Figure 1 (spheres, rainbow, N blue to C red):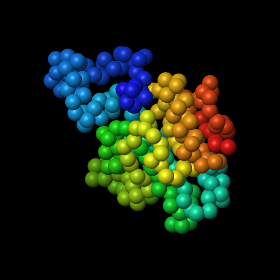
Figure 2: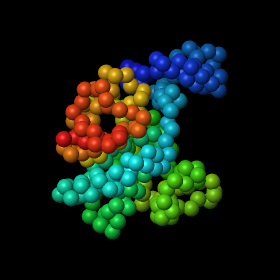
Figure 3: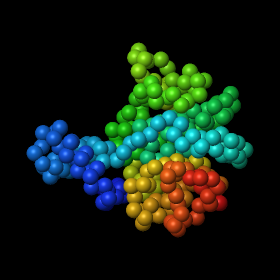
Amino acid sequence: MSRQYGINLEKKRALVEGRLGSAATLAGFATIHDYIEDILSDPLKINKLVASLTTNYTYFLREEHHFDFMTNTALPELSRKIKNYDLRTWSAGCSSGEEAYTAAMVIDDFFDTGKSAWDTTILATDISQQVLNTAKRGTYPADSIERLPEKWKLKYFRQSPSENEAIVSDNLKKEVVFATFNLMENFSRFRKRFHIIFCRNVMIYFDASTKAALIRRFYDVLEPGGYFFIGMSETLSGIDNSFRQIAPAIYRKG
């Protein structure tokens, strides 16, 4: 996990043993060792292993302060600054998609009737195909959208045959492109820099050196004046970096 994905689980032995033990039993293996040997022979099973060992906890409008900042500060500034009407946002470590869809709602609500002039497509990436499949389906428990404004519920979600589900509208789905990406890979695949990058509650799994290297790569693929959002429980303090902090868990390039 550390070598391939940068995820350091050395201090999470109980979590690893618990989740792997349960998975091994469900899969019919006598020992965790036998289970791991089987997984390592199949890339699809490796993907499920990664998903089981990382906590994909997220919800709509999580850490609402960040989205308020987008509406009141980042988007007004960027909309004046960007001349080609191409706003580029990346949700890195997007998990099951709630963060990316929330950002898409914020952007759509901000531009309102003027949005048709803009390309605001959001890139959302994760190492787990399992959570990306959930994100692409866009079907969530009905109570997961309780924190959203009523007008957003009506505009960005459609009725489900089941009252227990909330389904992202097709129009909102078109605003987000989901893709598999390992943050340990080279960022050279990105041909254009981003104006906004979210990487929230992802780097908690990384050791200091891995985190420092990743932060440098994020800095390099961010436009000058662009914004970098991390989790509210995270900090870049003590890590050599060129970002300027402007609010809790919000950083800026330049």
